[in-house]
Length: 325
Image (cartoon, rainbow, N blue to C red):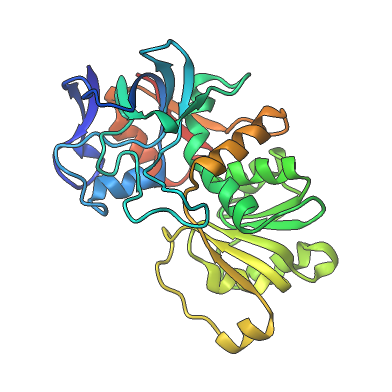
């Protein structure tokens, strides 16, 4: 079969499409003939060597396709070996494409528990783009923050896959969502996707105009920070609000005013990708028809995976970038 293989860590040029052996069959695992595979920032970190993936290696966490044993159309949950607890994953948890060969290929083999029916009405590209950002956003907003109807949400960094999915989920839950963005174009795109408003976060003072957008200007019930700006994000929370943190691609360390934090009665919630329970909750919500499919920014062939990564790293895309075998 054809697959995108990285033989070393480094830049996008490490991603080369070539012929490889078929996935190895094993008990309890199923081979999926992929119709589409979506890119995530996590894949960039894999390519750079953050997770010390074995080399040579096929990256890729997201995918949708057809089971080779039953012919069913499925989407793949990228959470492997989650374990029995819902509050946190087991110690051997990993993401598909970290060490197990991933979805940048014509076929992939995954545990059967990681498969679910392809959502009705979703294209192959939209289905492939759903699992990682969908289950991550669902866990952050529902399982961790308990976002409910009538509440207000601020999403930091409009345009990324998690951010656009979180906007869709918030709307489906009946919450009022606002965004921050790096450009007027992304703000406009977010408004077109259902955001009630937004501000640019190009300067350090953005929490002030962001907070002014919240109901009565008192601050947001929930803030979702997938980029690592939570030392500033917390300034736009209402007293007693919840800050959910799940990424660090902008900043990996922050300095907090501890006294101001505990006097504000804030909740700081760490989260990452969800497990099977979160995936079932997500798909149940998708099944109601209330969740708009992921926005697709562009599609590329396996041969053009390097170019797809360059576009992802450039940061200008609004929505998900997808590979089509």
